[in-house]
Length: 373
Image 1: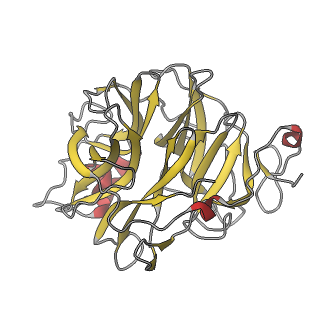
Image 2: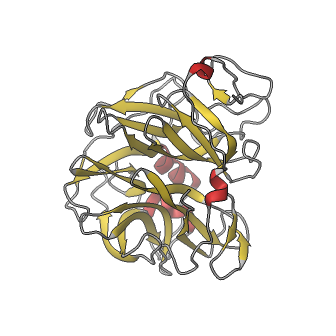
């Protein structure tokens, strides 16, 4: 059996990635083909686009009507891309097939007042089916200053940071993919002062174990706001409304080294793969999968101890399109997999065009079909 990387805080190598041996006695998954090699050409006319809005963060599910419903973030292009933290709202778009193109249907999580934790902004949705209900996880924030608009689009650095620091994971529940959605009035999980996750709770990644009905929820945080490394934690709940109890006092992935705090991961997507969890995660530095902004493929038996697959690369920013052209995307963010009959069939990601990193003239949610082995 080949040795796999075991990520744990209890044992570190000089490279900063922990190596363990207890997992070697477990029945472990093995990928003879890298996940990245399953990616087919991306349809240029696929996904979800709207020239009047910044579009970000796709999460797709097949509804009770047989159509495919994408939950996504959008905010007006009358303000800058950086106003995602003040102006974003979660919307729903629909298509007859997973690749799309998707057409806008409605705003799902609109502004509802500064008195709510998610009252001024909702962003980064994740949709899953739980028994007979749809669960829509997201993060929301609130702030005391006026929402930016076309007349006053700017946000001071202090106000931007205040909105960012108020990010909390929320949950909306519905019996239908069409709604209505009942939003919880409190976050499902809060930051913990004095701990590694003291600043925020953000970027939820839920997965359901169908045997137990338990919900594993991965989340992002950091010790001191925007200061790297960005870290991931896990919690679990026996029912959607919680409580969501942390499974570990510590972060579950630690890749940073002395002098390189940006050797970290973010934007996880996790799913139940029959007898274990799997994840694809953005590699911010590229020192894990070999490409900055590329994807890492990992697995876990319990959601706490995570292992890198032998063939670790999950995706690349180098895209082949269905017309034969190729491109290198400045960004390939918020990876999401459509799972049907227990198998991933399509990879979605937020992307865009622009002069350089984080300076976009257009953003959209793209889709890549996957080979079925």
